[in-house]
Image 1 (cartoon, one colour):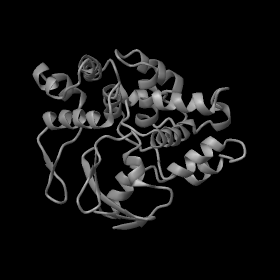
Image 2: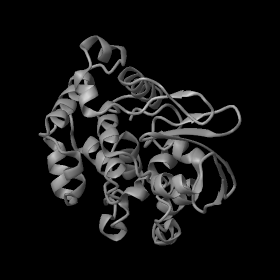
Image 3: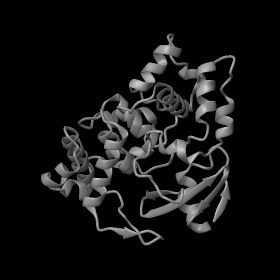
Length: 275
């Protein structure tokens, strides 16, 4: 099917540091596994070519790409004369959206991201998926894997987890999986909590600090005001916001603007990202 979508740039989202399982194909598509589904999608300007039908698009991919949120209105809140830095970042990175990804997957993925570059994160996440489940077939007949459930992840042997090259994060991943598998951590309940209550619950998980909790809130629970701060964001804040970022002015979309700043300062600075 073909759909027309404004303010969506697949290439920019793929490099935004929020998704780690997208694959580029030789014919210009991205292959995107999400839940039990797998999509091939190609972009030509504002036209998108998808290998799914209307029903799957409405049920799965329209929510996933957050197509109901008015990003034109979000971008329109930035005034060039008031905030030239954020205005330039937005103009450079317009098309980035905060995906509606699976909360459990993003909880584990965010733990894995600590002090690692994006290629290493992708390798570890893919290894986890490959070890957890028998391969499924996409619409081209190629294999893909779903993300492991808490029970699958908690049951993995030490040898299997070692193959994923998680380093010191291996312990944090196992403990989170055991909490979720036992019911001590209810991810569905977490999604229903107010922002601060969800943040406090996440901080109780071993290995989850402020930055990782903010990533889970933003990318897994779609709390668009969450503002993860890593080395790149801190660099932008020090350079352009010496008096502090105006969170009150930009609420409740500070997380969207964080993504613009993150991608913009990385592209300006170059080099690999230590996430």
